[in-house]
Amino acid sequence: MGKRTRLRQRLLLTVASAIPLLGWGFSGRIWHEGPPLLQGRYFHAAAATSTGLVFVYGGWIEEAPHYVRTSAVSEKGLLILDPSMHEWRYGSNPPPHHHRGVVHFYRSYVEVGRKPIKVPDQESVVSEDSLPNEAPFAGSDGRDRVYWFSPIGPVYFDAGTLTWGQPDGPVLHNITGDWTKRVDRENSMSGWLRHSGATATGPDGRLYLTGGRGRGFDDPDQKEQVLDVLEIYDPTTDSWTTGAPMQHPRQFHSSAFGADGRLYVFGGCACKGGGVEISSKPEVQAISALELSQQARSVREVEVYDPATNHWEERAPMPTPRQLLSATAGLDGLIYVIGGERAYGHVAEDMVETYNPATDTWADGPSLRRPLEGHASTRTPDGRIWVTGGVSPGPGLFEPVRLLRGDHEGAQESVEILETAPVAK
Image 1: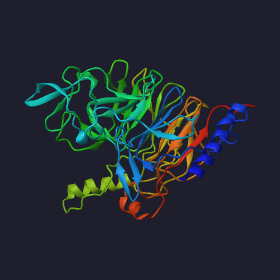
Image 2: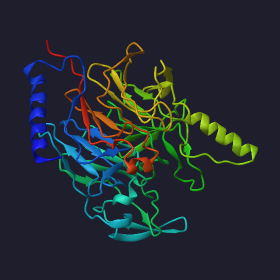
Image 3: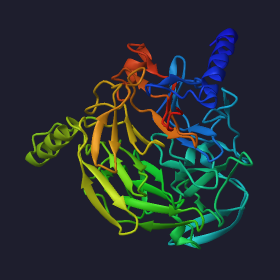
Image 4: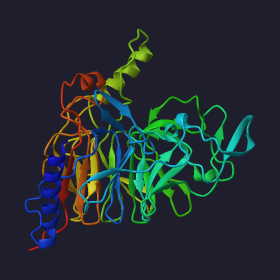
């Protein structure tokens, strides 16, 4: 994007951001163009802080003519937007930063089973290869920290100091490069190694991680599976609790807290994704047939979790089941279920449907300006929903060769904004 184009974009955004201040509001509830990302990106995470900063991190980024996996702590992995500045900038890398995920500053060895474990200094921070980068579990707490849930536990970026950190307590790294639990604080670790799920921050400041695909942390021989798991992380105590499992295992879904303080889960796929095994064995054929049937549809059922009772219930199903979507609650009491695809490997959609938790009803919402899947969305305190990146129009997320050939638009730099605050009269 040229300098003149960026200047024009900033002028338009300045005018657009001033409209609510003048009391006009965004009439008609339509999406508006936001400041573009610094590169096309998909399968990433997005979060916002109480001060209005917007963060985009992880996923795949476009660096022509290739697509590159990134993580939050890689050179271009973290993007930060101050909406008043109308332009994204790169976040900082955590020191020390090393290749291949190795932390070099160690205090001592300890024994975990028969494996020698090195304990790094308190100030050392994990490097990029130790953080899941594709469809990560990530979110923000009530203290303006943006979290990234890695196999060794949470890593956070402090929006106030613009620095990376980890909760108190040493992190263990063994000599083979595999991560293991902290021996002194067993409860500070998630019980699962997983990705492609959803994270939502509750009104209590805790982060709720649902579903995804993965295996138990303590069972390296277990095959990855689609999960119904709910885990809850408390940033104030650096501790985990396990909630009641969902009624429907799913990945590629999204979640959001309603104004009633309950967690709502939308869409996703019960499939593992990818190819299926062709075999003459009846048991393998049965597994392959099940996988194909799961890929052919998205999860329609909507579930709601009540933290007070630790109980899940089903709600009105989605009118249009989708996966690789996003869901974000507006200030108007509605939850906006945005984009995605109707079945595994299908084309992206521009549709937005709104769910009203108070009435358990659905309605059509304002369509996106372009079809998107694999995007991420978040809401700033002023009520604006920010939809970042994604792939358009598809199929593309599971066909990298088509992306590289340029058969369609591919990863997007686009940002779309929807005002959900009550319109001033």
